[in-house]
Amino acid sequence: MRRVFRVVDFNSALLPGGKDQDITVSHDTFSCLDPRVSRVFITENEVNFLAFPDLEDSLVIFGGGYGFDMLQQAQWLHTKVVYYWGDLDTHGFATLDQLRNHLPHAVSFLMDSATLMAHREQWVTEPQPILRDLPRLTLQERAVYDSIRWQRLQDNVYVRLEQERISFGWLMQALNDIRLFTP
Figure: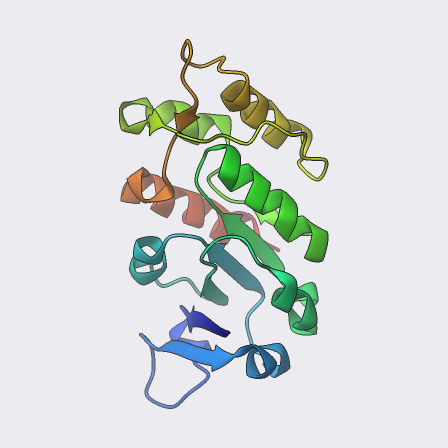
């Protein structure tokens, strides 16, 4: 298997030639990297990966869903602030829970109640929800997860907000907040 990522900080490029470098490497090579960034974003959607804006001191990884075993081998990830951006649905939270099995310090990104409610017009129905308990969610994440899995937001509907349906302006504001409040 291979891992695709991009350094979204022009000053921290891994290869000569500057920015906009989508890099695909083997898992072994990925594990041996030592990028000069402090923040790593993992996104599950390829469109979001490709459209992710420049952000100083940051790298974005195209996660592609479940299967984070190889990330655990990348010891350098344990020294970075890791943000996980998944769909706001039961599978997105299950993926976050699985990621935390390997990277317990991972922080959810745009997987909160405010994001979900601000994008109500973009909701679709999740066809096959996950209903099991997810022990590695925070209290706030569990509240959103429970509101989806127990159909509290819309009668008899498992709500789903796909990450690519979140407005670009909302994303930019969240990234600006991270930029302002990261030590």
